[in-house]
Structure formats: structure tokens, C-alpha cells
Image 1 (cartoon, helix red, strand yellow):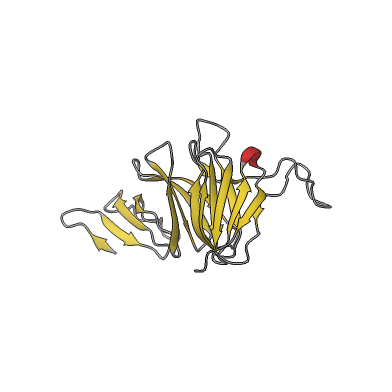
Image 2 (cartoon, rainbow, N blue to C red):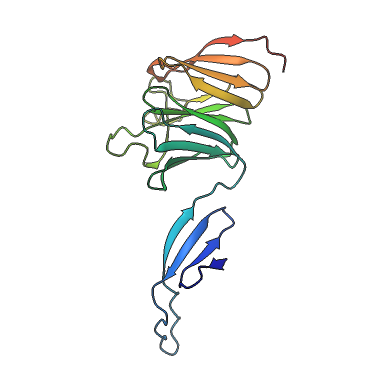
Length: 211
């Protein structure tokens, strides 16, 4: 915690790696009546730095919007940011998996692939509403044509999660024509997936790297 000399503002660091700027609304809040619970001190709060809670290993810029970028960390959180307004646009979770890298789809940036230390790849999608874009909670892309598991809700098909590798994903990239997703893993393989129509079927596995 620290103050700004000559002002009433002070900065506070949190255990979530955030830095907050607090601006008190009232110097002397009203005293509560006897027997009443005193009110909390009112203050305007600005988030100066929104932080991840673990090692940040994934970062990628939007291919069309120069101010938009994504970041991922080993706490399993995925963020979309606006560098111009310094605001968080979207947030997603990997449900316990530790993110290691991320990549927007080339050309339009409407998909975000996220690799994990557990060897899987999750696919997130931009909002269907062009006015919202990536705002709000990030949505895991789902197989529209998948057969639901017994007892599963047929209106809620399973989320796409590529799980061919047995080791951490070190890098992934979409091809310039958006048709293929390439995934590199620590087991020295490169996996190619069909990204057309959001099917993500495995096309090939390349071998030959030795380190």
C-alpha cells in the first residue's frame, strides 16, 4: 500500500496480482447512530493493473484489431484485453488445466486456441453478436454435430478439447487460410487439425524433432 504525495489517493496491491487506485468519497463519513453497524468507508476504485495469479506463459495479439490481445496463465485463466482503454474485455476458465500458450485464428481472430501443460487444447469463440465481440465470459466452442453422451443434455453438446498429446503444449498456430491448426508438444510431435467448420479432426502427426 502507498499514497500519492499531495493527494488523497492511495494505491493498494492485492494477493491476486492486481494494483488498485482508491479515491475516498468522503473525508469524514457520518457517524452511525448508537447500536447501528457503522457503514463501510466509501471509495472510488480504479483498477490500474489487472494481474494473473500464476506464471503467464501465453500471449497473442488479435490479427485484425491492433488494441486487442489475449493472455493465459498457469492458474487456468484466459483473458481478452483492450490495450487502448486498459480494460478487460473477456474472461474464461480452463477448469483446473494450466494454460501454456494461446493463438488467435489468423485473418479474423474469431477463435482462440489455448494449449495446456496437461497436453490438451481448448478452443474459445468470439461472441456471435458483432457488437459484443469478446466481451463478457468467454465461451468454449462446442461440437454442434456431436452425439451426446448417455444422460447428457442434447442441447448442450460437449466442448471441443483436443487431447492427443501426452505432454505439455509448447506452441500452436492457425494457418493463414484458417483451415488448419498446428500444435507442437513437448513429446517432440507436431499435430495438425482440420479447423474448417470447427470440427478439429486430426489430420496428421509430424515426427522428427529430437529436442
